[in-house]
Amino acid sequence: MSLTITIEPVDADRDATTVHAWLRHPASAFWQMQHLAAADVVDYLVAIAADPHQAAWLGRVDGEPTFLVETYDPAHVVLTDVHDALPGDVGMHLLVAPPPVPPAHPVHGLTSAVMAAVVRFLFDELGALRVVVEPDVTNTPITAKNDAAGFRALREVDLPGKRALLSVCTRSDFASSHLGRIHP
Image 1 (cartoon, rainbow, N blue to C red):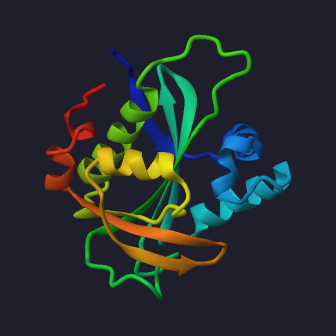
Image 2: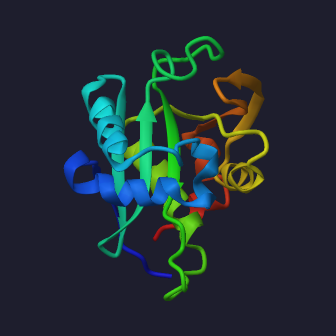
Image 3: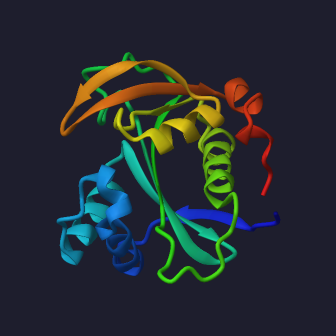
């Protein structure tokens, strides 16, 4: 599989319509944002851009918008009361666009390639020493994907709207994982 995956800062005005469509899809239920209007998504993305402890990134596969990544400093955002953040920790949320209906040309392994590219980006471009995630404990597909990327579960924690599986991944965890060997 040869995919060109790029990651760039989100432009709220340019990208909000695309992100809004992704968030409204039933497959995005774990994001708890299906109720947002398009203007709310613009406001949400603008607020992230204005916060020095967060960033939003648009991912493209072969030039097409395909995923959203949110990064955050877990010492200041989301995990402040449940995680002893270390210097170099970077929190991450990943939303891969739902497949089109009807499916055009499904790309086997797309989500794995995206996950590998995102984790590599966090280590190589953002300088993360550890990547921290906190998916809903009932979101078994993302838990399996996190496992494949080398994430180690620390414990379950209560966060607003969910019981989460707090997990971390070091560069060496990722390098020795199944997804760490994927180079799109």
